Length: 116
Image (tube, rainbow, N blue to C red):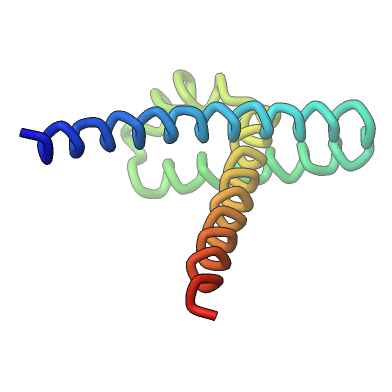
């Protein structure tokens, strides 16, 4: 019974840590987005134009792979997602990747510190 309880407790703790990590990633992505938008206006404008290219790439791929759904998807999904939304998603992806890399590096450093 204690093994089941320990497994259940560790699963709950892991889920709680995952939710905390996700909240930290979202808040950090928003802070980075606001910092670039407020303090580096020219860079932000350039990134928005690059995001518009990414959005157009998505639309072109959708037209190529599913031409019968392209018009419907463009009006419902791609039309509502502007370049700034795509930029925020991309910044979130970059922040998440950096956070996971740092977490991996710290865990690897601490796990190797015991064997040194």
